[in-house]
Length: 88
Image (cartoon, rainbow, N blue to C red; front, top):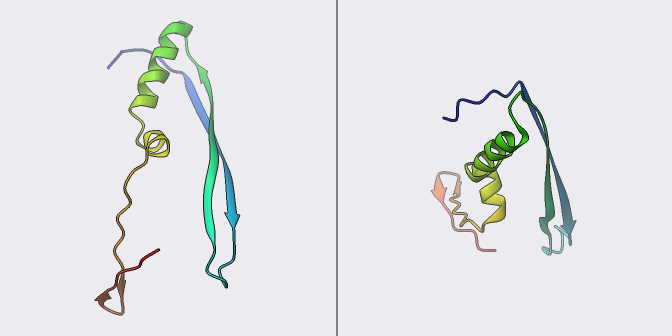
């Protein structure tokens, strides 16, 4: 660990979502066009040290890396006790 002091850290995350099409017509699609994070940090450390901590935290963040990089999604469905395939 870096042995640095952070007195307060706050993060707000915003997504621009969209939902198109129709469930009834089976044309529904959803997704996000952008994700924004806003950090507020209070620390007695230098700005350079705090930025280093932020860079390391962002590289080690599972959520941010999953949003930035395509990750295979594997789903299984068990309906009434039987495994069922769902094709999109």
